[in-house]
Length: 222
Image 1 (spheres, rainbow, N blue to C red):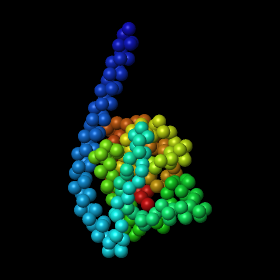
Image 2 (image 1 turned 90 degrees about the vertical axis):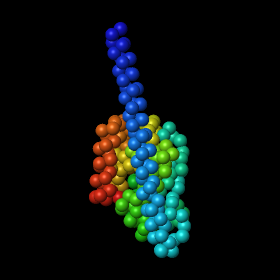
Image 3 (image 1 turned 135 degrees about the horizontal axis):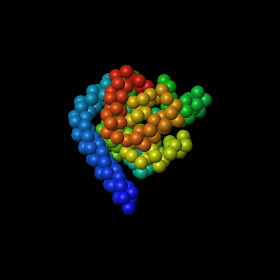
Image 4 (image 1 turned 30 degrees about the horizontal axis):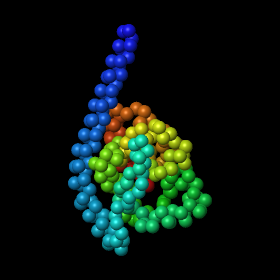
């Protein structure tokens, strides 16, 4: 009887602890994304002017379908860092063995010819991620979590949907702050799983500091 009571008390504490963590995390997300959007506006203006100076009058924003918590699709926002017809160009590139091999291994291409001059700057400084603050405000994403993937990407790399999609994806995460594009896709998944299975305020704080250091050192940024 005493053991049953102890088990119930442990479960209640776990539920309360989880609620407090989620509440704190969401509150932090809302406050930071609201403040971040104030920075986003002037940066967006500068990016637009830079593209126009280079003769590119297309939208500076890039939207794409991504998979969120519980496998739900949402519209994902970033600053555009590639040529406007990047998807069409990618299909042509993947016909070449060297690009196809890189894409299958990392889901990225080294020295991607689709990236614009301005895009290189945005990526190196990670400023291209700023529009995702809109996704955080909409509750599609969190500041910290596994990166949101495109439909079919997880299956392509034999990933675990139950683990990966059990939380909201994030602007940054354990993979994004610990190697990023320098790692293979399987190494990436292991880091994302680690975060999901060990979530805590302490781990989130560590992740934030690691992200700042990665951005300053430009670790893994391509």
